[in-house]
Image (cartoon, rainbow, N blue to C red; front, side):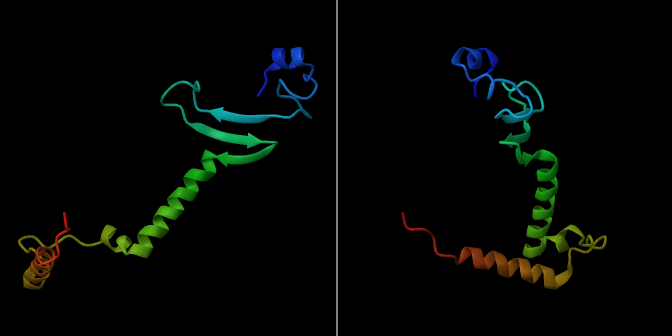
Length: 112
């Protein structure tokens, strides 16, 4: 991580110090000034290899999140039909809620 003037002073300016073909460089591309708190890294390159690209990362995150929801069965909750007007789900739903509440009440409490 040496800019051009220090690289020149050290005698390594032919190899590092600026972004040119054939020179060694690690680059981080930011969405705004790097010291701005809202700035995000958009892309990171090390030795010419892209190690991070936000455009690809956002797409992968959405795919992984959807897969996690499907594996947990949460996808069904997203597409569930609301109860009919005036109906709270009926006696079966009320019994299910009551049994869940009873299960919580009978759970052992942690030892202090």
